[in-house]
Length: 242
Image (cartoon, rainbow, N blue to C red; front, top):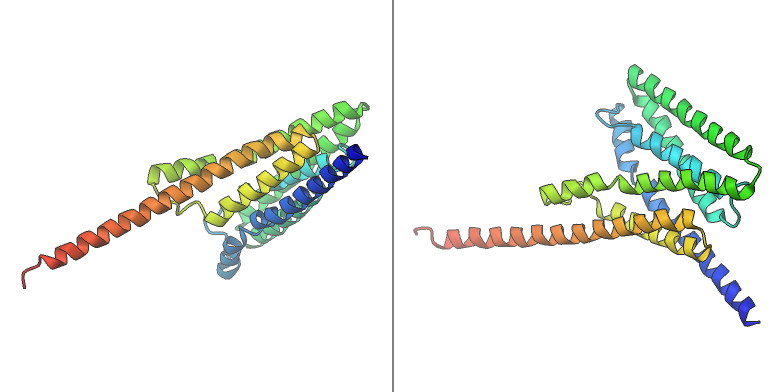
């Protein structure tokens, strides 16, 4: 009786963590909207790159495949969040191609075809593995590698923040969404005993914490510096000859 209640409680907590992860991931998916508003308004992609959305699409498709019942069991939340993510990336890429120059347009179309080609190879190849455990390991490793590389991408921004001592290029809500989503799926993966979920999201959680710490540290440093500059300015006014 006690064991059954404990198992049910774990399932409820796991589902709650998965739902929370889906909700927080939405913050990441909508973050490029201001960029695409500008692209649509100016009817030009300007200097914006479409590569991050191509890579995000590939990442979502591979992780989505891992979440399907054909590869792993009880990972519906992984499947839903990456389905939504893939849909968002396709919308962004469609808008990007619509307003890109001809050369960029052809290049992006080629890259998108390559993404679907790679995904088809991964999906078809994994289905040829008869042993379901080995199949899960194969796709799980690919999914983990994709997630870890995605979570590692903010390292460039972190380095930029430290060098410039400014949080201008690290939006707070994007960092917060990354942390909340990663920590939710970290809990989800632990409760589901799935290392292919909790390991990459554990790394994402740590990087999310680092981003938030840096944000508040440099935001506070900037505020203190501004206050000091203001005090100096007022003191100089006081000593001006009347």
